[in-house]
Image (tube, rainbow, N blue to C red):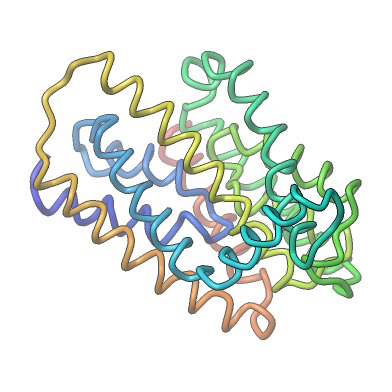
Length: 265
């Protein structure tokens, strides 16, 4: 992998991780469409570290408050400030963690094909469009019930199917449950933190066991480019979301899905 490939893939990861268009699908498809060799596990880890750094920095004040209140809630054994939101993020991660352990081999061996990605891109794009139109959009992420958390957590597990989009399916579920666009997006982004950490740890373990040689300069470059692009993407997306809605992303998914069907069927 050369510098240009590293920059393009890092930008792809940074710009798609938090948009409802599936970063995993883009990282799988980009090398195939451009005739590049697979970028490897190490690079995947580095660009995910970059997006993790971006979301942690963007929500640093909220995360600091949630962590403080969560620790206090453990001491006093009752709800404190934003401790409920912190617990929601933790419990909302359980379904995808269990699903990942149970279905990892199935996903890797049978669900990474361009056809699966194309169909998931189209189907879940239409579902996102419906949720954005039909949702009441009256509640924030601070008003989630435990039933809401379970539903969104289970929806996140569906994102193991490439092309679904983790952020897209969790925003879809949030909108269906009556969250505002901003509330659904912010909770989706907070949910990404433990998911990216867990996925990164698992991929790192696989990398260590493989014993493959890595180019540290390209890894650092990928992490930096991914972090900057992801931070700018989060900031721009949240500032525009209430005005533009989900329709532009739905249209993008439809075009991408049809293009993939044309190219690979």
